[in-house]
Length: 50
Image (spheres, one colour):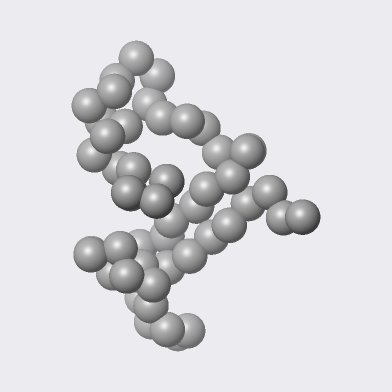
C-alpha cells in the first residue's frame, strides 16, 4: 500500500499527460496537514479531493 501520491495538474486541478509542465500536487500520511496557525493559507492550497 502506497502512503503517498503525486500528480501534475493544470490551474483547474486537472491531471496532465506525461511530459507536460504543470503544478505538483502531493498527498499522504507523510505530508503536513496545512500551514501552522494559518487556516486561510491552508484553505487556499488544498484541492477539493485533498
